[in-house]
Amino acid sequence: MELANTLTTKQIVPEMISTTSAEAIEELVTELHGIGIITESCKTNSIHLLIEREDKTTTGIGSGVAIPHTFSSEVKEITMIFGRSMEGIDFEAIDNNPVNFVVLFIMPENNKNHLQTLSAIAKFFTKGGIRKKLLEANTKEDIINAFKEQE
Image 1 (cartoon, rainbow, N blue to C red):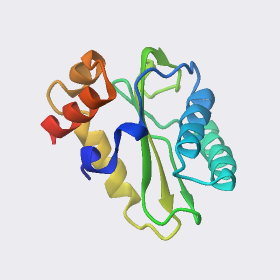
Image 2 (cartoon, one colour):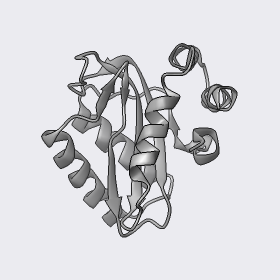
Image 3 (cartoon, rainbow, N blue to C red):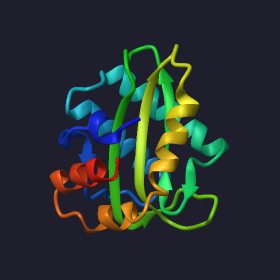
C-alpha cells in the first residue's frame, strides 16, 4: 500500500489537538466527514466502532505510531486519513510512548486484505528516517512528499 497514492492533502491533519485516543479518533473521523469523504451515519458508526475496538486493545503499535481501523458497509474502498501530533497522544501504545502519527482507516466490510494493509503501514514507519521527516514537515504538501520519497 502506498500511502502517498491513498492520501490527498485534504486527508492530512498536520496539527492534531487531541490528547487521548478517543479524542484522536473522533477528530480524524470528523475530518473525513467534514471534507465529504464519508456520510454522517458512517461517521457516527465508525467513531463508535473505533473507540470500542480501542477500549479492547490498543492500536498504538509503538515508535509513535497508531493505526486505528474498522469496517463499514458505507465505504466502497479503503478510506484513510493521516494525523500528526507534535505533543503526542496517549494511545496506551505497546511501548507506553505517546503517539505522534495516526493512520486511521475505514475499510469496506468485504475487505479481506486488512491485515496486509496494517502490515504495510507498520512496515512503512520502520523505514529510515520517515518519522523524523514527518515531524519536520511544515505543510500538508511536505507530509505527502515525505511519504512519496519513502515509498
